[in-house]
Amino acid sequence: MQITDLPRFDGAAAWSALAAETQAAIGAAVLEMAVAWFGQDAAGEDRDATRGRLFEDAAGLATDRMTDLAADALPGNLQFAEVVPVPSIVGDLAAWEAADKAGA
Image 1 (cartoon, rainbow, N blue to C red):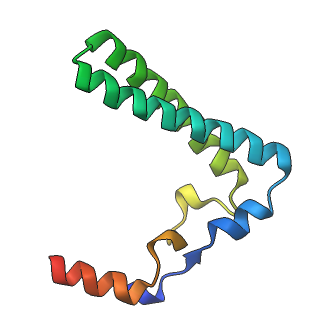
Image 2 (cartoon, rainbow, N blue to C red):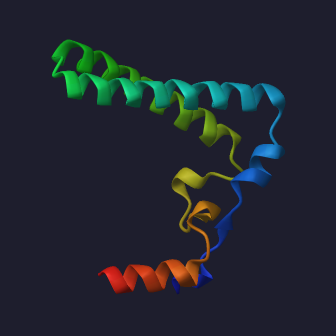
């Protein structure tokens, strides 16, 4: 299968089809994950090992929570799909493939 033949995933369309409470739960988990990542970066810059471990644990928990919530909300069983659709965030697949080949 060619890169350009892969199915696509439109996150905005999927998001708009979710119930408000599902959106809120996923959104909260994503925000928690982002804050944990920022905390990891800050702890690394400060060379604070204890804070680093704290934010690493927070990032793992938030990532697991977000993944579980998203898996439940996505259509089908994408975690175990033979062909997973490519997220629309990468843009045009032909352009991506050309840039990938040029950088390889």
